Image (cartoon, rainbow over all chains, first blue to last red):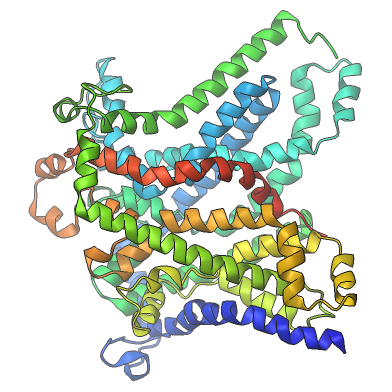
Length: 296
Length: 297
């Protein structure tokens, strides 16, 4: 019964990880019960009075709720769309580039921003988009009036989406490049012999070759509809642009940890978690059904 | 091949080259701008005269960074969390991935564990319960708060597990027949065969630790315990709701004007150095990392 004996060792190998997950992931899930209480830190989770759905009802009545929910979904969806299209376009161009040396240099540079933190990048962008930053100076050359980008609700969502694409498009293109590499070269040869131009080869060989990848990424992105990227927005926004950039996560942070309305913040966060979870389940179900995707 | 060297084809090639070089340039401008800012004279920077090349080249800002005690302390805390957190995650990831890579008949609870692990990745209790849990454990203001809550990177475990599963099954059987136990097989057979995959997930976790700022902000009450990214985060003027209520728009606009440009730029560049040093390794391995997920049996 060698096999049985080994199982004990496998349990031991998993135990520390499991303990950490229970402590820092599972326990907080049960801790979310304070969303249904009027939580008072002195009394603790078990001593605080039960209020049922009061916080959820209150949340629905708050005038900001709709705006915050809208901002979250709006920014997340814009990012999802832009982050599908821009990397694909970039990967297509890279695929057509024949100069290996240039290709390597371009790759090295465009992957880099992915590894830099939003804290650093937000500080840099804050300077670049400031009144005398390079963007305003550049447009100043054409006589444009300087714009205070970070205080403008009209500009801010565009800046959020653009800088996010700027950071991620290179890295996101890797998956497309890998898919291109998997296309059978015989298909290009056959198309060439049939007299297909370069553009037609792109249209009829390359693009169909990544169709399943695009569909898979789009499906999995569904799970991110409630995720507008806290790290980015938290580091870039300010009260002047709350109207256009305050999202659920930033609202939960301010309500819970700055205003200390623990229960209300937990209720808002819990609602987001539940919706996100359902979306992810749906997206995985779709992905496994139509793209044969399995997570493990 | 039809007309490889026709004029039209060459023009297309030229246009593609220009577009890609432009894309790379756009990616690099913000970093280059910060670099030239950090080497520029303070007065020139405040006057908004610095573009992509330093004005009145000087090391002054870097000297100031080296003398800045807060920066120094925060940098060390970040190094500490990377070393501590990176090594804990390294051990836990390998052990858990190895156990989870076993077949169900070898390890009956494998699927049950797998579901628990994946579930923690998909469903979160939320920020407040997470914070309260760590607070109740008495970890606030200790380095453990920065290390233990992220000690189990489930995504990395799944990547590595899939890699282990792609290795030939005969390895395990042959070693088992020779009398080798599971720990020996893991450390002496699976780990050496998976070094690129292990390097990938380790780099992911190191970069993650270096870049993370939010846990420092929330879990450290004293600014003296801030890791580097959290410290940098507090440098930029934060306008909060209270100041906004008391100030006019013009005053707020004034507040958003940049001061300390060269000094902050130097701090940003120094914070990037560890990533830049690791970058050649990252580049070598992360392509694997992205495709690791697709290695299935």
